[in-house]
Length: 374
Ligand code: HEM
Ligand SMILES: *[C@@H]1O[C@H](CO)[C@@H](O)[C@H](O)[C@H]1NC(C)=O
Ligand SMILES: *[C@@H]1O[C@H](CO)[C@@H](O)[C@H](O)[C@H]1NC(C)=O
Ligand SMILES: *[C@@H]1O[C@H](CO)[C@@H](O)[C@H](O)[C@H]1NC(C)=O
Image (cartoon, rainbow, N blue to C red; front, side, top):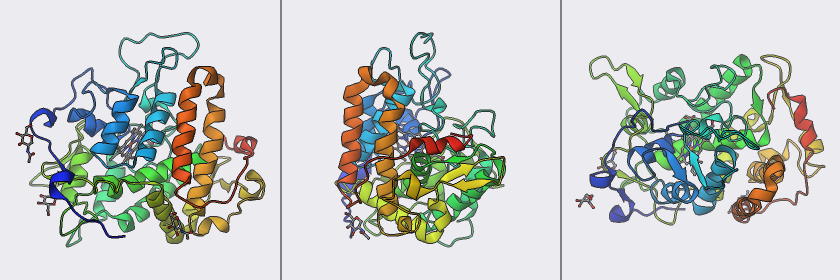
């Protein structure tokens, strides 16, 4: 499919009310460079305490995430990061909001920074694994960013497209297997940590008439990640919370938001690039003990590992598994959030409806218990 470019519609104006303004000491910032940058430009509240609808709208309008996808991410953010006791439909994009001493049934709302294995997952593009960095899975690790950045430093025309991100994804996966004894790469975690790699070219690229499908340069990548480079030495440094949308940046085409169809295509390319990356499982007994999940048993025979290498099957499998597992994981609060679970299910259903998937009735979630990281 060919993209078209509409300069006026795709231009993101970051002057005036949306000029960059770094976070103050009480403003929340966390694991997501997209949300951090949206807060720094006042597309969502600068405090980093965001409503469900604002997170969804800004992801859709500014970064061009398709609406079902944005609903899925936005609702999950609230269900895991928010305050389910008050149902205020707000959550922190970083750590727990200051001054919330909420105890009782659901404890303190964690914010997105503390949603390990629920939303925040191992083998992220630039964030450390929870069990390796003192339970800090939300800050950028400069070593990981630098590994990515080095992949295009010698290129005549730097562009962090999927062909560049896939080797980085493999490196990050191999590091987790070799360094994190609790590495868990379950179906949902594989989905989240892969899709956030895909978001880098998918949502951060700059679009133009010449490159309607977008180009992601060194400067744009560094800016949206809060990285600056020393003009004389080229040394990179990270300033926590300084994620910035550059001037003269143009989003994805209107109506061409990153959707389940893009996800399916990117996952299929990942499977071809290296089939290991779609093998879900985790370390079972220390580092370098990655044991694959038996997909046939897990899905009651609907899928097997060979099938995942074909067409849209990986996307079907992980989205269907998410649809099975996420409501179950949130069951204890179902009475309170039934409406939201319904919306989550609809968002996933909307995504799945864009693909033609085998029928899957259920998964054997107990099989995940063999993984200590789970
Ligand atoms: C409702 C909206 C959103 C929510 C709730 C959300 C939440 C999150 C969370 C929890 C993570 C950590 C996942 C992990 O550890 O792998 C993450 C990572 C990420 N998000 Fe978002 N996100 C949203 C929108 C966006 C948008 C609009 C972008 C656009 C650029 C984006 C780009 C990314 C990227 C690139 C990462 C990977 C970070 C890294 O490891 O380098 N997200 N997001
Ligand atoms: C960008 O926003 C500023 C401030 O609101 C406005 O003055 C300017 O005309 C806008 N630029 C474009 C190209 O729309
Ligand atoms: C985006 O591309 C246009 C056209 O090539 C260019 O003028 C603009 O400077 C680019 N923006 C960024 C942030 O690189
Ligand atoms: C994957 O899904 C897309 C969107 O429905 C469809 O166009 C494409 O043909 C599918 N690919 C395969 C190999 O089934």
